[in-house]
Image (cartoon, rainbow, N blue to C red; front, top):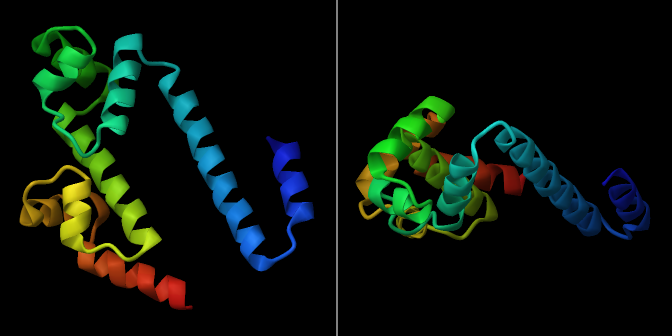
Length: 151
């Protein structure tokens, strides 16, 4: 990985190319951290986390996720709480708000659009969960992203 990005940095011919390399390095590093952090979890939990990440905008009820990993909802709920240290709905909300952050950072998406894309049926509930998870409202976060892009 080091050699790949070293080469990309040396070959960059513009600031835009360096920004692209910087972004790719971040994504690559995050993927690596994610893979390493899942290493200590059971195959069922790893499979469930992957399923949740792929289906962020879809139906992610306990019953649906347990069905996707072929275990009973009760067993899955207990296993998930034990291994992850949190309830499944809290984890799903965390993943969904992280995805909303990514959408807001890319720009040109409204709070309503982000909520829908991230699997929230109710914008007010999305805003409440976003504030709880990120410490600010989605609108405040969008303004922060806009200021970063401008400056």
